[in-house]
Length: 105
Image (cartoon, rainbow, N blue to C red; front, side):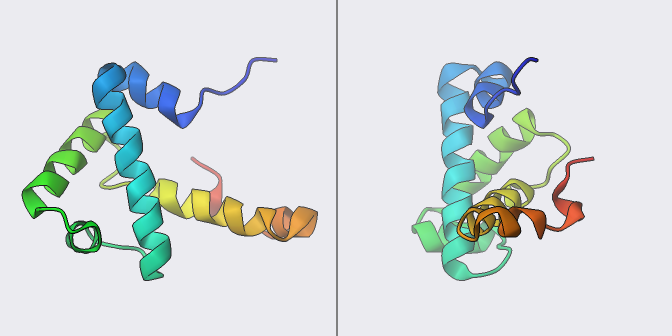
């Protein structure tokens, strides 16, 4: 049985070491901001929460889209991450109660 690649491995495979690391950092920061704000966020909310210039946030999003062209922003990854975090805090019953919509198509 082969293991699935990690998120950082996918980012590096698509963007190289430097860009891949930036993309993975962007996804992590997006997830943190989304969790802190308490809902799915926009790029503008991301920039405001991190106190980044919007131009920098747009550049991060462009690099993200180069790696994940089927996604507009990292929100879907953030949602899955936060659902897994929530489920892990509730043990096996938490995992079993995850919505089927979290399964990637």
